[in-house]
Length: 126
Image 1 (spheres, rainbow, N blue to C red):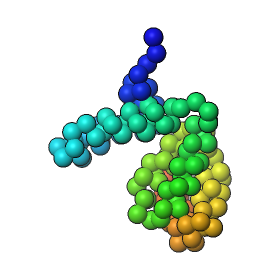
Image 2 (spheres, rainbow, N blue to C red):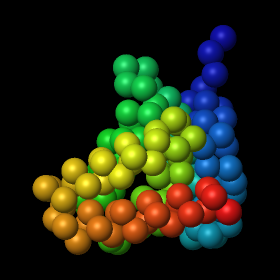
Image 3 (cartoon, rainbow, N blue to C red):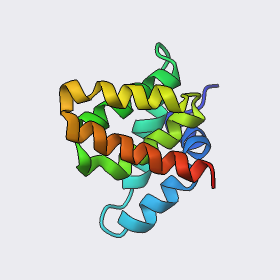
Image 4 (spheres, helix red, strand yellow):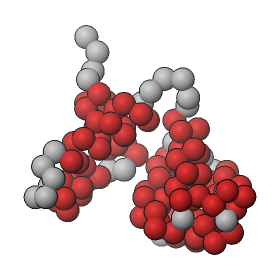
C-alpha cells in the first residue's frame, strides 16, 4: 500500500517548513476552509515529492522563479530559501541562482532576492 499525496505532503512539509500547514490554516482557514490542506497536498505531495528531479533542484527552480517574479514574493522566497537549505543547497548555490535571475527579472528583483537570502542566512546563524 502506498501513501497518499496528502500524507506524503504533510511529512515533507513538516520536514522542510515545520508548522506551515497550521500557520496557513490559522491565517486563512476561516476564509478558505481546506486551503492549507490543499497547499500541502498539491505543492508538497504532488509537486515537490515527484520523482524525476531531485528535491534540491526543485528548490533551485522555485527560488529562481520567485526571484524573477520580484519583491512581492519575499515571504514565499524566504520560506523556499530555508527549505532549499534543508534540501541540501549551499548558500553560494542559492546566491548564484538568485543572481542569475538578474538577466530575467532585472537587477532590482535579484538584489531583493539576495536581501531575502541574507535574512534567511542570518536566521540560520542565530
